[in-house]
Length: 287
Image (cartoon, rainbow, N blue to C red; front, top):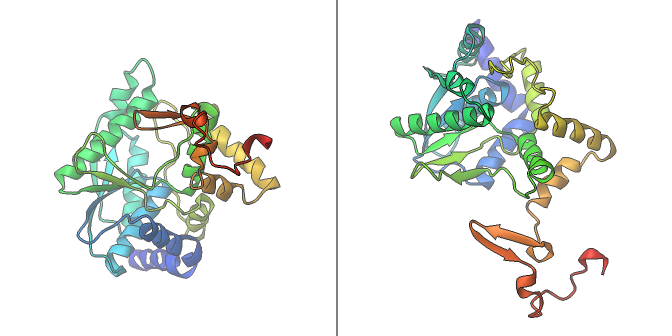
């Protein structure tokens, strides 16, 4: 019975969600060159819906894809409550994901921080994942961020961080030499992940942090929750707003920006303005 359920869930990816999840997952892999032949990838599972779906997609691609790679499926337990740990293990069994669960005391360490415990927790968790991946001989870690995370990050940077940046589909680690981070669900919409869960009768842990103790994915007071609410309103007026925001990060005209920087190298439009180096025919600012 368990094997039948596992197979039904796996088949639903290519049967019922081929256009909205499976094909989109593959497009992200290919478009951003996330996986190369011979890669050894640490597939990192938090226990939530996104990372569990990512693990299932990676498992299927590893089995049926045309790019040979190996994967280590790991769950880092930062100090979950027993019921959350049990739920994760049940879902791993249900989905047939051969993950090893590793215990840490990251929640405990973050709780002792006087300022920014959430930032510290995120940094400790990421650092632990990189170290564990290296121990397993991996050169990449895969995280379950999806398309909505990308859009929300762009807006959060603009509205709350005074900067224009996005969440990249892959990046080299600055602190762990030779390691890369990849995001295989980069182009997959969150509502399709939710629909996949509902169609298969799946439920996963949400926010399991002991400091918030919140069972809702949209904690009140959270900046990301505010952005989610704003996007819901914008979609009512413009259903294509998400893609417009995403495309804006691909279609940047540096000559219409006041300033920008590449690493520590900063540029300002006045640096070349009086030298007549602006492109003729640029009509920004209503000219």
